[in-house]
Length: 554
Image 1: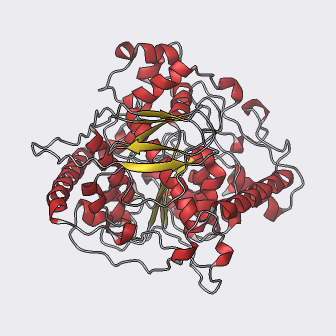
Image 2: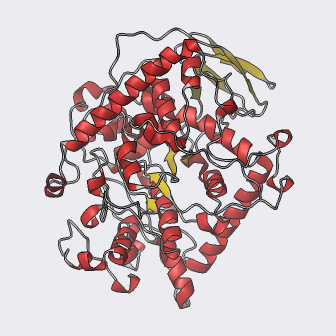
Image 3: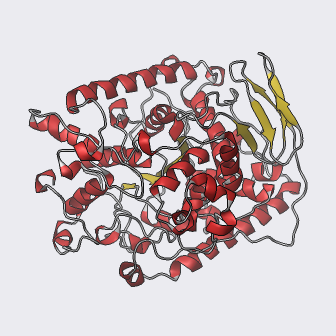
């Protein structure tokens, strides 16, 4: 099966024109300022200080500083066609022009250099009912400015984009034929002679409350069954120095004098690419997952109810109506209440960025990550992920983990939804942009028809596994979980669901089923004991290494 390389130049990389060189230098200067600020802040916390402090202590602020030099106004208008089946309202942020679809048929909108905001029925648990998915692959006619288009670099040059000056090797080209790059393309039309090797060096940015625990379980199972090595938190902790910026001191067994021996990094961290690049090889595949900020904040309010911003608010509506009373930007846990995704990606969650700085943030993320998934389209995300990693469909099948019972979910009014979008503006810009690029990648790498076939196959595999493994055929409330070693952590005001395995399973089937339903904390400790058995024996304090309920799982 022939696959398009992940890091293909966009339009074979727009040539650097003299007019763009100055803008390029300015952006690089901003980027270096950002990374130097992160590094300075991260260095303030030594490993010893980290181990003495609770994991929730201390959050630093990072600002992208405004330079005196002004950006050239290079607003470019582009025309986007929206399919007939996707009717709705599209607003151009920072532009007074609104276009509302009133009847069936294609309609067009003008875009500026600011990201396009999408108004949809966010109350539905499935996310956007009608996502505006632009069928043609992205080009230089998108809403990005010419200067930023010109400076997009490859993921393989992550380090050079932030710190180094050396040019990394270019990936092997395995591009699709131009005449086959259509929406309806099926992979079966490509040459079957070409093969790809499954990728085993992966970094997953575990964004909070975005189905990331389920993705983490997929990575745990893939790595454990293939004897891969995980970059685990030091001393059996559950997070990689979060909420501080990630540094190499957070990884157990890291030796700066040796080449990277790690395959997978997937625990919670506040992303700082130069430090991650010291731990992982240059060939590593970077990906993350995003969630509609409306759904994310509703979930965060329940799960993180004990944090300072949410503790005194009776409900989410009250918090949004009186943020001046409840929210303190300097509070150590303020990121849980505002632009949580932006914070996890390493940016200032309290920033009030201009359109240009928003575009810079999006561009930096694009240069550092190969793929951003969308939790509202989880099955599609897993199909795309396995395609780009050259994995099998069996590798990405899963049961939902760390999910809430419906009784703890709140219905939000339209007014509340709009307030959430406004309050989390940076997260909203982030989500809108990568929701679009997500579907672009599907069109480019797979095609809609083949995607639908793969999604149906994935869902059938999940149903089959549920019949084989689960007593009730699905998730259950915590009080009904019989095996407490499989009980998920109950946190905040949320009621986290779990599973019961069927009795009488043979040894191999039971092991396979157990891996599917093991919560992240228990699974992480199992992996730690496997990789560092001698050191694990020294930790008896639950704060460092929670005791497993059953040693038979080791």
